[in-house]
Image 1: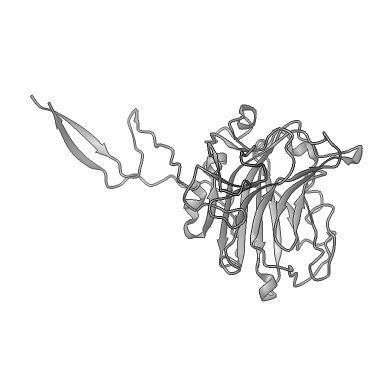
Image 2: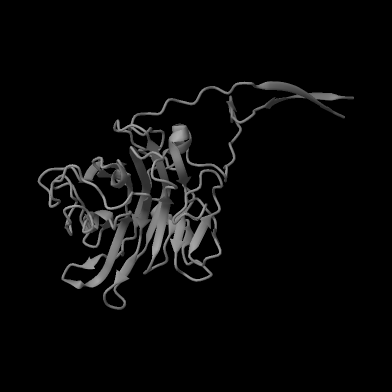
Length: 351
């Protein structure tokens, strides 16, 4: 005798009916949701949910295995989003550290993140290099999340010759971001028109920056926005802003760097023109100790992404839904997804 059962086919969607929930499986090839939302404006996305980091063949370039779609490249090698000079076996970790994961917002969907080894030193980058000088030259943004362990060492407050030189960001034209003293500061404008070895803090709004203790045992969202990244070629005015948000405590976002802000240590110049096209958009996690055995603690990063626009209208990447829940780039609630369509009923017969 034949029995009949009705099966709902769900192409591409997951559906909950009554108390029966069909769970979506994790798509290991997928970019993060915000990248998908932005469509063609998303340049690359590395959620850093990888379980392993494959050697690119250089012993310094590493490809996370959690994505094959819209991969980033740290130094022009496709998929090699991570750069770490560590020999044939990378010492970076696909970490599921319970202490760090517990400091993410309660709605997070993060399983693991990229972490450095305890007391790490030396070269470590993650990020992307744009392939040319014109793609999204008008406005481009880089966003990621970063965690510092409770024992992370910055410079020694009693003796700045001790401790570590801790970097944060790196771009072209020699421009670097540093957190050696806790506050984010940009420096090395030395090859730019009107050269200047700026700055000790920012440059940005007064009183808006961080101290060493603000970083420890917390996750921060960092977003860098550049306008006219190809100003070296076009002569247009270049601007950079850095927004940070403590997502562990749900604090308000801060604007800590704005190269157009008045009253800062950076000399006012208009137009401000870098000495090279800004193609590199890198998280720089280098640590260089001045005295042996002074670099303690570790860092972790998650959900790195690049997006760009052909207009300068204040666009942002904003939050990763996988970390901060259902928010859009502007911080407002994301509308619920549409109901599944093209549901089909089929009859499967068996005896």
